[in-house]
Figure (cartoon, rainbow, N blue to C red):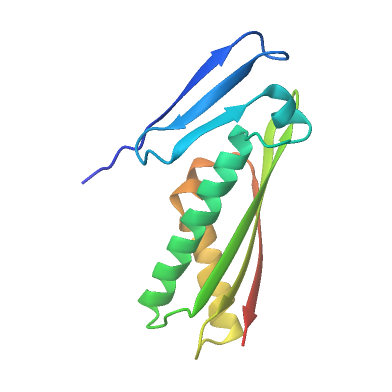
Length: 142
């Protein structure tokens, strides 16, 4: 069964001086300020489309990685994933850099790398970002 998640934005003013409010409708978790300056320069307490994509990518990868581990008969004690999404004004989103550190008892380094790479390519957010560079830095901790 397909699921649909929704958000909406109300924007006021022009691109460079205006501002918007992004509301996460499906979860009801909140409304967040967004501006061009927060997107192209410093966040200063506001969000951007790239930060929201980074949040989605790190969560999606963690889920895909956890599932890959389960399929291999392993369970992680801890998975910590970050995503850094690069936006270049005039060009667009150019890269998402995933970094994962995990504690997985009984998993070899080779198995860890294979499962992490499969999660990177199999994660639905990675697939949605197929037109950009996606890199992965994966560390297995003991």
